[in-house]
Image (cartoon, rainbow over all chains, first blue to last red; front, side, top):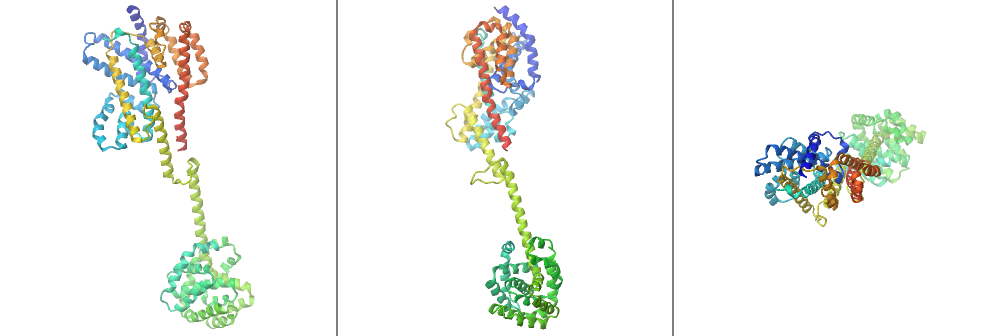
Amino acid sequence: MPNIRTIKTTQEAKTTTFSSYSSSFPMQPMHLSAETPTSLKTMFALRFLRAYSKINRYKSPSCLSSSSSSSSIVRRCKRIKLAAYASMARAVGPKRAWSRALLHKVLHRTRLHQSVTRPKVSGAGNGVAGGAINRTDKLRRLVPGGERMDFCSLLGETANYIQCLTAQVHVMEGIADSLPPQAWF
Amino acid sequence: MSLGNNSEFGFGQKSENRFNCPSPVISSSQQFENYSETTMTAESLFFAGWDSLISSDSNHQTNQSSYDALTLESQRISDISHLVQCPSGAGFNKLDQRLSCLESGSYVDTMAPLGGCKEANHEATNQEESLPISKDEIPGQSINAKKRKMKPEGSTVDSRSQFDSTQGVNVEEQKDISLAGKEGLKEKDDKKHKSEQSSVARAQKVTTKQAKDLSQNSDSSKDGYIHVRARRGQATNSHSLAERVRREKISERMKFLQDLVPGCNKITGKAVMLDEIINYVQSLQRQVEFLSMKLATVNPELNFDIERILSKDILHSQGGGSSIFGFCQGMTASHPHLNGFQQRTMQSDNSIHNIQNSANLLKATNMQFCSLPQVRSVWDNELQSVVQMGFVSNAPPDILDMHGQMK
């Protein structure tokens, strides 16, 4: 059983390398950028799984001994998260402002979490002052690229972002559930 | 004429105030005032025209001119008043020919000679030169006015005689007028209608300007009305219109977000809504983080099939059927077909009309799936759900586009 699987994975390796490159470079035409949530799910799942397998293959030869160490796991976690966000942004395409901003952040290695974790810090201080302005500021920091949006477009982008995040979470949950039990440590 | 009177009405009050000022002709001015009050309100409007024209002149002159205007008006009422017009000055003769068209009644023609105001001013200066004469005349005029008041028809001879003594040329004209009858009266009307002309012309100017402004305003408002319609009682200002559109947009997107975020249906406040949205986004991001952590802990040595998991994902999202596949070995062999199928589904998203074709292609290409009827039904359901979701997700952008067009 494992022998067959390894053979098949080597077969896949070529396709995955190509697809991972294609995911890192926007080779796919625009009309394939998914608009509907379900096709967005499939798109995201395809890209993310390819990136995920690539991450696994990349890690497997070098970190055979230290794969179980916590630092490597944290690094892998970051990589997987970046891959997830990047694949989602790729799946959405450049139509949306948040996907553009997210992709820019991912590609330029700016801290993706800066926008995510900062509201926790600033939210405590600004929450006392209260008001919709601070809430909108919070939302701006949460939605990638929301700093330069007006409130109206921010709401639209937030709606789309929530849709995509929900799809992302769904797909990742499915992937995590579908993994065989021997895959876990 | 009526329009001009209306527009000049405010100046009439000014002129009355002016008459109250101390001047050698107070009595006459008062009489004029009385006359204007008694005869016609429109005459006060002519006062105004003269006042505005000859603001630099003395009150006496203004009184004279206004008196002339009054006489002009009175000409229409009664022919006697024409005799009184004569003392106003010799400069009127020049203007007779130019302003002869005034009596024709076509105010459009009066519009053209706007230089009449300047001419009127020249007349006023000419009148300044003839100030002593006019002063001498004033009591006579006042008497005439009184006489006119008392008996408008019988005072013609008296006024004539007085004016004959004072002015030569005008007297001749007056005689001509008296002889010629209405035609001559009309000519002198024209003379003293110079003031009328100027005032009327200006009034017409004003009215035309107002009309133009009104038309422009209506045009601008029309421009606003084309895109956005304000209901009754709503402001039609462009800024308020744009603000209203923006608010409608925001409320619509808020409603859309309300549908997206669970547990947000019963919340009405905007701030609470924003809080909920923020919390939901944060929770989703944290979930992604957690899931990536969970996936990171997977043994990297273990290689797995993308397509199997992908199909599982889709089936998992479908809410069932994941147990059907289990470890289906044929799936991995058929992954190019799967890829083709997925691309086909994406294309079907773009062109919904090709649903049946893609479904048939799916059946034709994936022979492994054909062996399992349940699986095929699942895929068909997936396709249908794709199409449905395509409809649902395409609707809000259309609405947004409509709003953009409205904007």
